[in-house]
Length: 258
Image 1 (cartoon, one colour):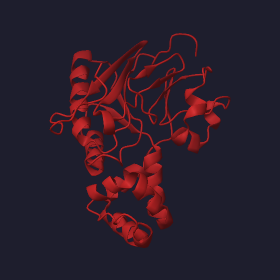
Image 2: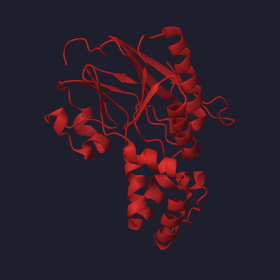
Image 3: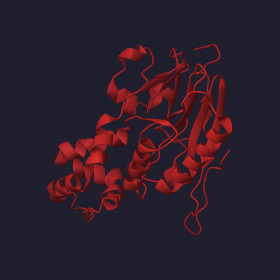
Image 4: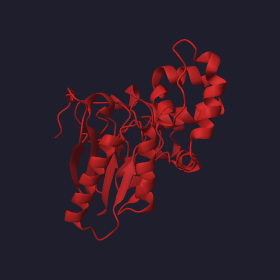
């Protein structure tokens, strides 16, 4: 995609990895709504979430509720993509033996968000069956539905929206689902023309990366306090960022909003 990429005239917002930070997602959505009110596009705008709604942060449940509320009554057409953390959560619900790995690495905050007791350190393996059963019961049906219908990719004009990236050298219509959710270095280090500009999250960066072949907008909200969206309309590309309305006392974001 060596010519100037375009959305074909449609206004599109894409939001990077949220990771349980409903406190930052809500002010970002307010910014997007304010921008939309100023823009007044002829066609209903698209709001694409790039995945990783759960884990790490304190309010995975609140993030999913916020997205569902936007779907039900919002000015955007909402599209949700599947991230590797949604993939991991669905695996926990299918396979209790995956539970200890998930809890130790990412999932303890998600359990707490849904009111499930977190096993004491070192007892994850002994309590996997309980955790799986309680989490299955605690997840509202509408949350399970959202997780189950997340798309793997979305194409608009000259842009392809995915969670993690694409495998260089593989046609876009033949990409493996695991790569779309999990790939890192082979994609990030490639300067190949993928055929479309790939808009992605998954790998945190201190500042958004707007390159000829990809746009990376995961600014690591769970450690930086900054949640990033990209606004695409025609050939225009613009970054929109938010921080929490009331960050914890003494908290200093490690990335500055642009």
